[in-house]
Image (cartoon, rainbow, N blue to C red; front, side, top):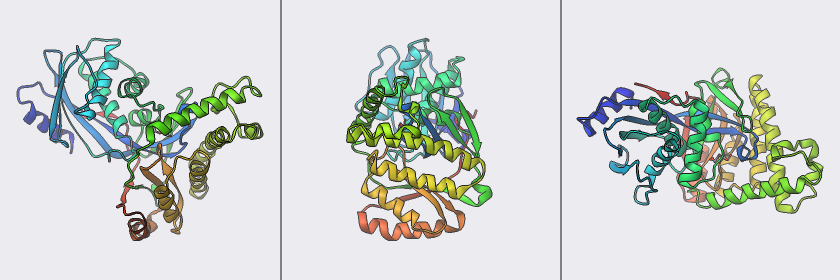
Length: 386
Ligand code: GLA
């Protein structure tokens, strides 16, 4: 859907409302740097060409009226009495963003129509896209001057404090600040970032994302457990390294100290420390157009997530093995929080059909699940379209 069609859909739903503003915000795929963001570490995500679009205009009261074109259903709530919805859970991302704005500024009521094509529940950050898109829409409609990084933090707080998911900052950051043709190298402590040109097209390679079809059941409890294990590892390591604040401060040179930790903490810390180093190396390889070396790091990242961080599952492992078996695959790994969701592979364009054939031949047969295969381009971050 384009901006004009979106505005038309809005007018059909809200015929007497003011002309709408239209915004879009993309989903993301993380190329490398998994479970590092909440350890103050490094990540390398890319905004994908799948997005959430919202059209909205102001009302004269304190009500927000929402309509989802995809669910063909609506909802309404008052800005004066913001509560979590159990009936229409998709509205909680927008409710949460409103709640976070209201902590520092009054808002006017709004009519909003939305649609999206980011696969949901697949680990491609449809929720971050919805939060970032809503934040941008609300800022524009209310004439606020909140900066981009403030909006990102606000969207993350909506997810942490209102929706109740304790995520890091990566997803909201890339949805807001991604750039077409680029990947984003982010330092999750300083929030300094660099947009690195993605040398995929010039090397006739593509980013292939495969949805395992496994719904990420354990994700929030296991995610929180990993976070607390990382914090415990930091407390233990402080005995030898008193200056550290997060696992980000421990370098691969200190891995011998990590070996002294209890087994579970040792494995978690080893993943995070080596993964941070892999991101730093990956950025250099990417900038030099060295896709082979970049792909090797993706493969190593998967092994580390599977064996040390223990957030993969047999279906993701199978997809990664199938992708790695195809000549022309530079590298493959699970992406996102894990326990289901997607893999990401960097694949020579001439091998994509073969990869699809291999996956479709073996994956459904061995798992009883139907995979979904996407080829994504690096897209622009959130934008005001009209
Ligand atoms: C989820 C979270 C992110 C990040 C990843 C794992 O996507 O929302 O903040 O922690 O998991 O890398």
